[in-house]
Image (tube, rainbow, N blue to C red; front, side):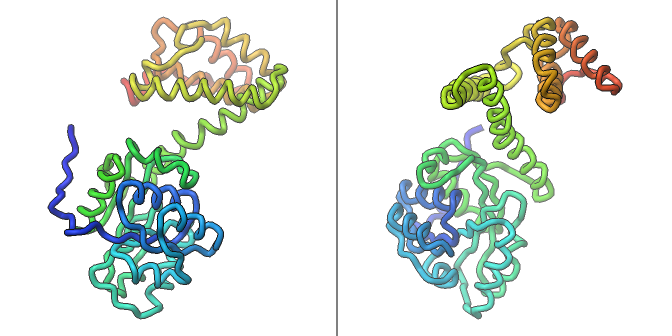
Length: 312
């Protein structure tokens, strides 16, 4: 379904934006907005070097306090660690400033607008705007196009945030407030777990005699290809390898060679079970038998292989 953005919500000129926090996510967002034609007017960070770098990238002015950043902007993004959001909101509220018509928006995945409750004493509107993307600074701003965003705010701020997502080339995720923890768990599995697997796989390739740089390059390219295939066809259709082929002999060989590394062997076994669940057990009984035998060797009851709940 095509997303519709109500552009009548826009002001005659685009809202002025400010950023409190100039770390990886904040820098990417600020740069993305600047590249999309938005005015980033102020940036405040406890790390002066980060603030200076972001100011150069966006044309913003570095300001000395969070309150000054808020004063200069229509919408201020608070892109600090989750544990610092309440403190920043309290600092702004403690100034006693009245901020009618202004908005404070944090970028936490796990918190809703209520975490900014202290700042409501200023009459500012609170919201949240989380990019579902792995952002590492200004250089990753291009990744925002095509990404999804979990947003929450009262109107009319919600409409303005939808417009900002549209301007970045992104997509709005409709997410119930009660589902935020599950949403974040999904993000961690998709965005962080593959990196842990990449590191573990790289160590195996190094053990096989490949130098570390070459091992990383080769496996990163493999991971990139798998992700590209999954984006087009979905994870089940993109599966390759011995599990989906029903090649129990190769799976057994892998488990044998990993015998000296119990942690990696168990990780392989559990992920093979997940792959088997995703592909479906029909025609792959040999793989199921090998994995069940490996589990019995651990002294546990064999797991029952069922169709994956997301594709059943």
